[in-house]
Structures are given as structure tokens and as C-alpha cells.
Length: 296
Image 1 (cartoon, rainbow, N blue to C red):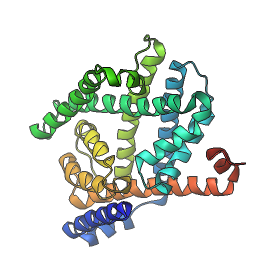
Image 2 (cartoon, rainbow, N blue to C red):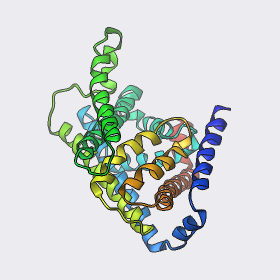
Image 3 (cartoon, rainbow, N blue to C red):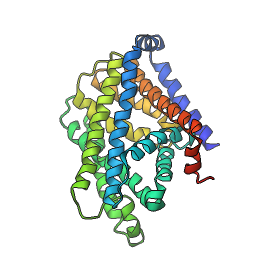
């Protein structure tokens, strides 16, 4: 019942956005989209998955496990499908990755790498976003301060939390406490590379709909808030929330309301297509489900 309510809430938010924009102008924007441009936009998703797989592989190397990159890539890609099949959004995708990789280092080890993947990505994203906010001339101080506050909260609060005796044994689920080496550096390097590639992904999406971006710095600074809002479990896959944040924040980078919403919808369509593709692969490769659920 709660999932239905969340779905209704997400669609309600989308409907509100459609009411406040010129729908005819929105239709015109999509009518001019080139199939060739969209295909390039779609294919670029696999580069993002490749970087994510490299980072996940590095996290396993820290734990002393050598996992083939093709497996990391395959599991990451298929998790998109499970993110839509399981009505938990990003959590559903992460649970799928934990299940896929459980045979490498048991559930706890698999869960740890997935949580650390999210956490290091979060820190990197908000660190860069905080720095860029203060170089921006268009982003309001309130947004800059909020971004900085979220970064420092994410950095400090876990350190304080895991000083409490009862929680100390769980600290390795989030924080990387082992001796630092070059692999740790690569984890954060891949986080930064993914962030840069995500900005490029948005720029390609803007190119597809002919949306002008006045400042790449502003765009990069605003993305952390969009991603954080999209991950909130108030609607499936951040439905309506993500589009709303794009609609509001991306007007700071020179986009018209209809263009900002069109970009958000374009990104939504691409993720749905990735999920459909992954679902079809899962359906036709039944052994994937058997391995996933340990059947047969």
C-alpha cells in the first residue's frame, strides 16, 4: 500500500510540473530531438557504468579480493533492472548488487563495498559541489551553504557515530579504516571521474534538446543536491522529486522551465530504457535468476 502511495505522490508532483510549464513548448522540444543524438546519449550510459564498475572492483581489492571487471560491469548494469522491479528505487539496485556479489566475500563484505561505494561517491560529490558553489556568481548563498552543510555533516557525523561503543563493530560497513594505499586513492579518483562524467552526461542531454548551458561550474555545483533529492525514498526512483529539482535548480544555468523539465524527463527515459534492456536480458537468461535467488 505504501508503494502505491509513493507512486501516486510521484505522479502528482509530475502533474504539478506539467501544469506550471507550457506543455506545447515541451512537446516542441521533444519533437526536435534527433534519434542519432539520443542514441549517443544512451550509449554514454555504459561508460558511466564502466567507471562505477572500476570503483566497485577497487573497493573489493581493498578487502583482498580480485574480481573480474566484466562481472562488476555486468552486475552493475543488471542492478538497473532490479531497481525498477523492486519498488525501492536506488535501494533496490543496491540490494541487487549485494545479492549478485555475495559469493565473493559473504553478505557483510558485499554490503560493505556497496555502502562504501555510495558513501565515497556522496563525499566526493558534495566536496566538489561545495567548492564550485563558492566560485559561482549565479547560485544563491543559501544553496551554497546548504551544500557545504551536507558535506560536512556527511564527513563528521559518521566519525562521531562510530565512536559510540555499541556501533563501533559496524564502522567498516561505511568507513575505510584499513591502511591507506594506492587503491584507496583510486576509489576517490573513480568517484571524481564518475562525477565529471555525470556532468558530461547532463551536457550531452542538454545538447540533445538544444538547451543552452551558460555555466558548467554552476551546473556541476548544483548536481549534488539533485542527486541527493532523487535518492530520497518518498517516491519510486525519485519520481517527481528529481524532475522538480531539475526544474527549479537548472534555471540557474540558463535553461527555460520547459527545457529544464525536458532534460529531466530525457534522463528519466534513458534510465527506464536501461532498466527495460536489463529486464529483457534477465528474462531471456533464466540462469541469472537461478543464481540470484540460489535456485536449482
